Length: 117
Figure 1 (cartoon, one colour):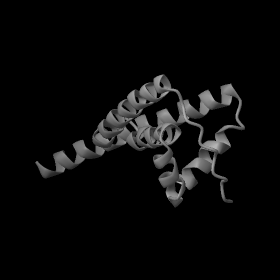
Figure 2 (cartoon, helix red, strand yellow):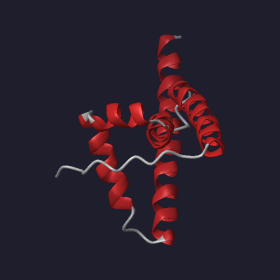
Figure 3 (cartoon, rainbow, N blue to C red):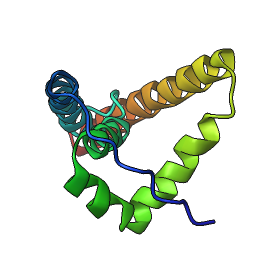
Figure 4 (cartoon, rainbow, N blue to C red):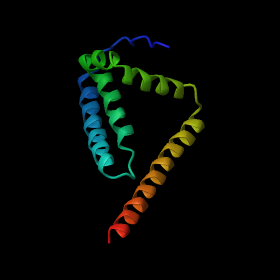
């Protein structure tokens, strides 16, 4: 399945500034999430890219030429068919999976440290 390229519509300056603040926030959380396993860093980095493609024509053109971006956009478009309640459930499950993965990582790190002692 190939996604059609959305028509890029320029945003007012206020929305661009708010979008850039959001991109920076998502990038910071994403980078912290790459270090701390409890926060799903990749999700926030993808959100930063997505918001950036909404405010920058060049970023949108570049991202839509990347297979990985198109693959993730298909997943995002599939979420559009869910109701609000189902979206909250999905968001909770993704967050819960990230927390469980983080806890597993912490236990594995503690076990590895105990074996080294």
